[in-house]
Length: 405
Image (cartoon, rainbow, N blue to C red; front, side, top):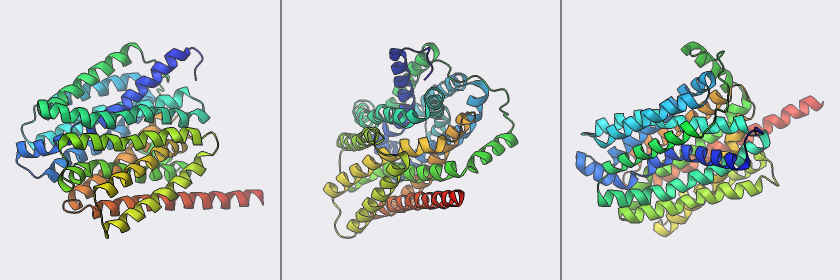
């Protein structure tokens, strides 16, 4: 990391970056307990309210692609500040929405603002830390980010019970104002503006294509995409699974959803210990195998007997494994890049959100009466991740043999 920063300032920077990443989970998880309230207010089925999550994920996917070149061209801070201003404005529009369609559209633009923090955080980590430290720092950020899914639904449930779902968006706007102040006065610029980075659409597309053509990036970004598919399929289906299917109250849902998120935190921190003994690829391979076996068993069990006390620990273990996978495959995908770190960070994040959007759409269409379709989605995503890693290992082994001969 750059030598001009003291240990305390480095810690503060990491905390700010972790909080920036946490804006995403807070924006998703805090209003999940209010799905039923939103459905009642607008006179629609609860599954239709899931489209507000889908539009948010699509907004993140598109927004990250735009922020990548912007952060390479102008540095990290200026686009980040602009994104937070957009997030604040659209959060207030969400609170005053008078129809479900208006809320869906506002959530899309809210995501365009919020995803600036997601892109900037990963890019800044890549800017400030050495190669071997990136996965470790990302695991630390996941620890901070992992607190959000624990706190957000619980706080959201209490806020919605005391006021209504609109209050959630006022709180999110206030949270973003605080982050804006911290970024303006504390967070340093980590990358010099690169005027050579073009903002012309054709050149941007070509740059992203050149990044996708990198074999390591493509495989690990896609692996992360399927992992995000598992995670966001669970998140988007959680209100139905726990509130509608198992009959939990909004407040109990907050506790269950939050306690499951402990699995994500625990996995990310155990991963930090594992990195001291094993390589990123070794851990990633083992995690892919474990996820595939776990989700396969869950799918089989769903045909026999599936109750709350089976589903609850199953999802906890799945999130534990996702806690391993996300920082590792993110680090592996960004490793080949230096000058293009911003664009690569944006693209890997966008791919993850595209996969997550598809998963949430499938959940909205299929997970309406039974939990089994969710388990098909989880197993299919895990199996595809495993296939990609097996292909990469075999291809790398083959290339090494050719080089040595």
